[in-house]
Length: 293
Image 1 (cartoon, rainbow, N blue to C red):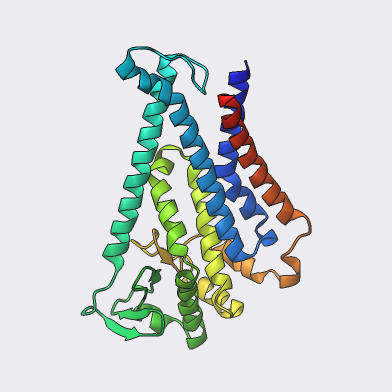
Image 2 (image 1 turned 180 degrees about the vertical axis):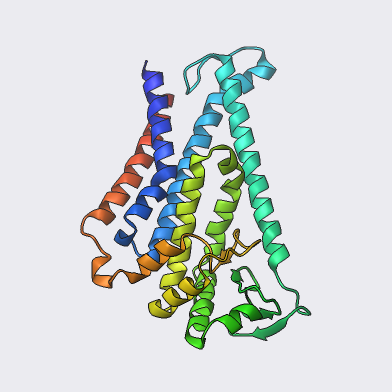
């Protein structure tokens, strides 16, 4: 009975941690835009780590019995050896899926990086600005050791100077805030999200936070809003895995930029979000500790 309660508590806590970006999206104005991104990443990683540890703890007795011939029947999740082997399989498949998702993300990043002999390159202080000759309006950023901001001539022709500068500032914010790390995490989760469909809502909420953080980093909310309106509804094929301007919930991003600063901080909501995160993490950790007592 106690084992069942512990396993149910752990599943509730880990699922809650992974799903917290949905709550933080609902109350996004309680957090600073860059803080919102870090909060989501920490909650998702914590939930996944705790669940993976629990699966391995459950699998360890039955896996250890293979060489000894002695079958241990103590599992974190109630059940017999079948539960142990099932936990081992889920842990291995989840780890493999995330590795494959991460590798796919890096491959997309490499394919989008523009070589020096393609397009027009302008080396700026902390990045390489690349202009590609293409009619489709497009802009995206690539971080790493050699950061790039890539735009097309179609985008340059379509936007007035202030809106074009807002787009460039948006992409530069992605690089300076290190959003590539968080996008890599979401890329690693993509194969699992294809199977566990509710996880798609979580990754969508996390991507919104990343794009809103870059929107807030432009310094000209008005020009950013106008650029979003002008480019909205034009998905940028092949760039959704990386930091691209006209992707995500355009209408929600425009609304987020329209909220006056004095209305953004809602008293009590920020502590509530952190209390939820620490409470769920504490519940996850305590169930694992109690299991060994």
